[in-house]
Structure formats: C-alpha cells, structure tokens
Length: 297
Length: 324
Image (cartoon, rainbow over all chains, first blue to last red; front, top):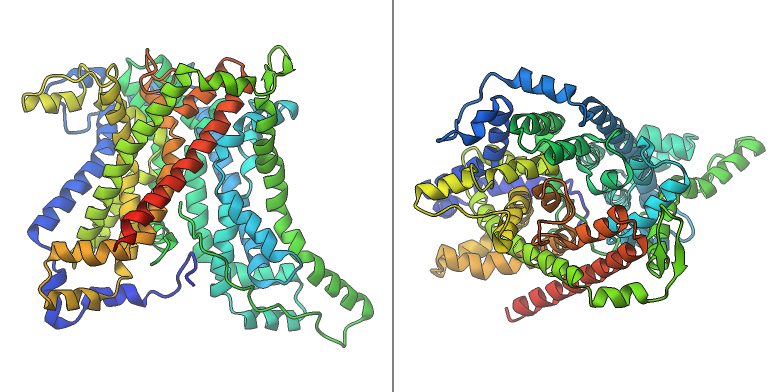
C-alpha cells in the first residue's frame, strides 16, 4: 500500500541519473526549454500585471501599448485602499489573519491528535469510525451551507468572525492525511518504549509523535492556511460588508469601484502578499506536498 | 488538495496495554482509564465539529428543501416536493446547469491535457527543474478572488489586454462578457491558469514512479518518444488520471468565485444569466432572495449532479483504458 506521504525518496534521486547508455532518452531539447519558459511566463504574468496596475495611475488601463514595468504610485493606491469607506480593508485583513491562523493551528492540532489515535492506538469501532471520516471527505461543503447559515443565525454568530472559524476547526482530510503519515513515520517501538517509561497517552502524542510528524503537519498547515485565506462563498453568505474577510473586501471593491482599477488591483495585490510570503518561505514543502499527496500507481 | 482513496491498511500494531506492575493501584487504574478512553477523546473533536457543522447541515438541507422557508419573515410552510417540481421546469435552473457543465468541460479537458503535456516535459533531465516547478505552481497560491479580478480586467471588452493582443494579429474585439460562449472561455481560463500546474505536478509524481526499464526496452524495440508516451506513460498513469478527473469534477461543478467576480460580485452571472453557475443560482435564491427552501433544493440537485458526473467520468475512463 502507499500512504499519503512517502518517506522513501530514493526513487526520485535515481531518476536523475539513469543508465549511461540511454542518457539521450531523457535529455531535454531546446524546444522543451522554450515551451517550459512560455508556461512559466504565462504562470507569472497575471501576478506581474497585478503589480503593474497596482503601482500606476488609472490611465494605465487605456494605455496602448500597455506598460510592462511597475510605476511609482503604489503608496498612493494602497493609501486610498485603506482609506476607502466601503471596503473595510484593514478590518478584512485582520479578520482573515485571525481566521486563517486559528483554523490552521486548530486543524493541525486536532488532525495530528486524531491521526495518531487512528494509526497507533487500539479502540473499539476504529475501522468503522475511520471509514466515516473517509466518507466525509467526499461530501462538498457547499452542500450544507444553508442549514449552516441557519445554525449561525440561531447562535447569533452571523456577521461574527467565529462563524468562519468554528465550523472548520478540523477536517476529515486532515485527520486522514495525518493517520496515513503517522502509520509509517512513527515506529511502534517508540510508542511502546514511552508507554513503559510511564508516559500518558497525551504525553506520548506531545513528546514522541508530534515531533515526528512535523514535516507532514507543516504541509497540512500551509494548505489549511491558504484555503482559509481564500475562502469566499461561506464568508460571503455569513459575514457582512462592515465585518468582512479580505476576499470580501476586494469583492466589495470589484462591485462598487470597478472603474477604479488601480484601487481594485492594489486590494488584490495586498490580499495576495501573505500567500506569496508563504510561497517564498515554504515553496519546497508545497511542491513536495502536492507530489507526495498524489495517488501513486 | 489530494486524497488517497484506497482502503486503509490493517490497524497498526497495537499499543501496549497498561504497563508497570510496580505502580500504585491508583496510578495503574488511571493508566488503564487513559489507555481505554484517550483514543476516543483524541478523535472526538473531529466528530463533534463534523456532526454539528457537517452532517447535520447536510441532512437538514433535505428538510429545508421541503419547505417554503424565509428567514426574514419567519415563513416556514411545509410544501412537500413542490420546490423540486418547480425546479424541474425552471428555465433559469437548467440554464445554470448548462453553464456549469459547459464551463466545466471547456476548462477541464484542456487543463488536464496541458498538464499531461507539461508534466511530460518536466519529466526530462532538466536544468533548473525546481525553478520550473515553482513557476507553474505559483498560480495555486494566489487568492482566487484576486485572480478573478485581474483576469476580468485582462478580458475587458474595450481596453483589455487580451483584445489588444488579438487586435495585433488582426482579430476584432471580442465581447467577453456579453457573449455566452466567450464568457465561458474567459472563466475557464481563470480556472485553468490556477489548476494546470497543480495537476501537472501530480502527473509528474506519477510519471517518476514508472520504472525506467519500460522506456529503455521500448526504445530498444524502436518505439518513438510519442509512441512511448501513448503506450507506456498514459496507461501507467490511468489511476492518477482518474483521480484528477474526479477531483476536477467535484471542484468544477461547484464553480462559484470566478464567475461571481467576473460579474463584478453579482450573482446573476450577466444580464441574461449567460455565465450563472448552479452554485450561484443556489446562493442567489437562498441568500439574496430569502428563498432558502428553493435554494436547498438547488443544493441537492448540485450534489446529484456531482455524483452523476463523477460516476460517468469514472466509467468513461475505465472503458477507454480497458481496451489497453
């Protein structure tokens, strides 16, 4: 069986070399490079264009040909962004930061805890319970959005920031991912040794299991953060424009200030900065997470 | 994100039972309780959150869909299957279904084909392979709403860059918003820009797991690189392709953020609903028109749609691959 995460990295290393006789088989041609450079340019360009518009003045959009370098108006545009009376941009940023950090920390904690229980502890009904978790992963969240909203109304949480946090404190995906990783990354002997030393189960989790799960927990955390930061439909349903997440702030700008491109683009750029910071810091883990998360043949 | 759908392996080796005979009776009883109940304590947060905010809303959607249900007025009349009867003859609903499927098809098919192609290029001996991988995955870490705004501007009819570029090669301005087909293509391009690199990396991972001797043997037999791709790579990748198709189906049929922002944050999806998706129609009915019963019925139809399409895709790919 293959787990979500593979500890074995040898196959990737081997791929680099290959038997000398067939070296030519895997050599990239200039055409390969050219195609990949084009793909790279297409990937980067919309983000670059976002920066160009965000740093210029509004005549940029009608300029022919379009300018290809950033201008000097970023400070001005960002200033107008935070002064804008309809976007509540600073509040949106703060709310998004609070929600994303809270959901990330909680998801990683509860998912590793439950994943450890499913992978290494013995209890009645374990397999059936694990199956229900797998089943929950197949259900799209949007399906239940209407009753979810009704619950929030009942709790008087609509328009409150906890409404975008509490329902997402832990996901089935996270639990399952951590279960798969724990099963192969933590040797049973380690847990038995800790048990003999008199550790409580939670102590075993905290001091033995959690440190061993750090790489996978980091990946789960990064993806959870990005997902929460990006969440759009549910905040749009439950929050209001005066207490938005940052995505709702830029939606508000797109709605009311669609002529003011530099303002709108300054908003999108600032809303993207935290994600880009994460990308710069953890790009390798993100790529590893995607590639190792795939089903392997 | 991706999911391993295979059955869980047999339970890991059991943790040891209560240990240490030399302990005091109290401590050993405590330790027995710990071993017995800790697992349930550890998994309970998930089940609490899921039951309250996941399972209950899902089931309750059925109940709501059997009512005329308004939150503002407090109206709550049981109407049986009336909402579903209306839905079946609701032209706007079927329009949204057609839009959703249309955008889904014209985004997913090129997306997965290009991803396969790019993955195949990345699976060569390559200078700067990390740079290319980072580059193609960059779109995934941008905010969906932000990207939708940028693309909407690029596709603007008057001063949009896309029309300007088309003008350079002598093509007249395209009405990306007003025309139904072109609006689908504009929205599909946002989806593809974001997800192609992600799928390419998944394919790349699977390609790297294919034994190299297969290719070497084929090369000795004189198979061209293209032939090797079709006869070795594609068949070996079939489970991965099924996986990406199903993930794309689940995501694609729920499409919401891109078309909403493309319409300037409104739910109508253009003046004649030319790009209103099922999710938007659900949202519009429930949260904009205070018709939660009808919205819930739409939500269930969406669920059915997703299941039907996942099965169809699965069968289709199995069938085409089955002939070897």
